[in-house]
Length: 367
Image 1: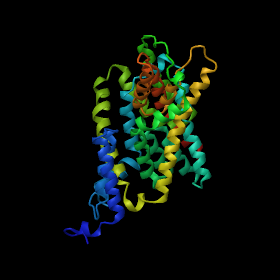
Image 2 (image 1 turned 90 degrees about the vertical axis):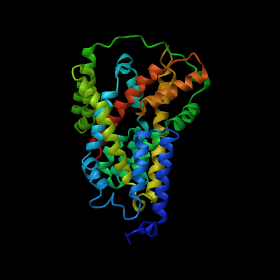
Image 3 (image 1 turned 30 degrees about the horizontal axis):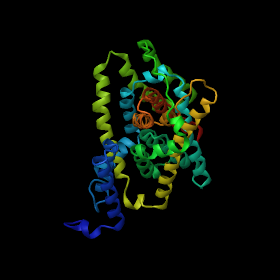
Image 4 (image 1 turned 90 degrees about the horizontal axis):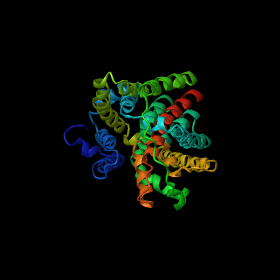
């Protein structure tokens, strides 16, 4: 019955629960300010898609139309990358090239979780889509899930964005468990105020795109959009386009992406044992990525005279710039005179590139 008050009569416990989850996401976005740009539209999308007989979903529902136009076609994640690329300053990475290895090491959880999911009985493609949650990169997770596991898109997307927003809660305990107080107090010399030549800044996104594309052609869409956005920023001749990519394009696409992802959280599809398993494995992937970066930084210290504060290894995930800020706060909590923010930002920027390349590698290697 879809007439007046029909929604109250047809409401199931599953729909009520999903509406409650949507309200929790909105609470986290507004009150706790955890990734509000994404969690707020995701939460609201979950609410309106779980109202019985909702006209927002279904054959002619506007959320269904957005899903077909922006998610299935992979358009929304790629447009997000253009905006992200326009926002990122790769200067900290270019002035500290060693941080690229921290970014690479922090992708460890992707492949270990992928192996875990495969051993648990998931098809290889679905296992790869689950593992990519560990990249802490929502658009990459959506892009890979759309290609490899469309039926799991809802839980994978929600897990990816939820864990991104919970970086301040998840990462500090992992970092403290793997480091000693002395290691957390390691001071690193200030990053030299090196002026990165404009030519280098312009060539960097072009070279990265060419190298990544030649090695793994599947990466061209992901890496290309990210680096195109950065080229707009660094060229210095299209400021209007760069600002549009950073603001109007990124904001509008985030809005559509978030509410569309929320629409995939329908009770009958979301409330399954598979969802709980995916969320749990996503958490494991996130923790392993953080641990991989920290442990690799500690490994490097075995061979370095000037030690690296191993906490910056945790910034190798793609949660930019939140992870770098968390590490700086932890460093100053141990020693008020300890400043590792620039090194942490360098690793965080490296993680943004590494996560995209890791996603492309998964696409290229898993057939």
